[in-house]
Length: 310
Image (cartoon, rainbow, N blue to C red; front, side, top):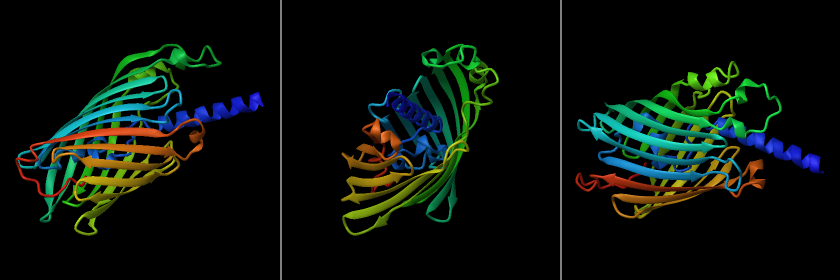
């Protein structure tokens, strides 16, 4: 029985590592309010400066589970023709630590009378570390485990497209098209060609009015990475009296999600999401927690009348 238990624990650990590897880019449940983390073309898509702070504790009670802290700010330039943004993400997964700092630039083109198409670019720098000596391994001569990786600098570049109007959006992005990660792969000898891989995101959302006090917004993010199964987040949020969002969603192969967001003032909003794990990891984890604080600057000066939908 003890031998069988060890096999099960090993299999679960391998499954967790596979999911973590496929999760090199940020994964958040409240993506519909934090578009810059997924798509650089989101920068400047509002008529004011927008910022957000987010912390995610994933797979609580599991050793080495991901912990992610994020900050983002963006705003328009030249009457909305361009947008600039900056993001910072600190990610902990197992033995690895990654601090990513990125600048975002977007150019917005008018498409018809009420919609725009934005083309965005991202350029950033990651500081990556991995305590390989903390791993348990059998081949003491394997070059992958010979040296820890300490504060290796990795340049990253990404691209995105984002179409939007007042109540809907569609986006396509590759946050990391290219990563100059030779300093990391060199540490592993010939074991790795690239460490940071390309992830593809398709995002979409639409708001429908249901009455004087209620709006509904279905949204989705479809994620593709060649070395992992296709994954989709499907969500539906209800907005009550333009102040409170109630939402639920499903992430294929991973979790059922519940979330709530409250517009404290026209400039400040707070949010919380809970992921109830549905995969085999649920035996070892009590789920994932995510908290968010958003602050908008200048929204009162331009007299925005409609609520912030995304």
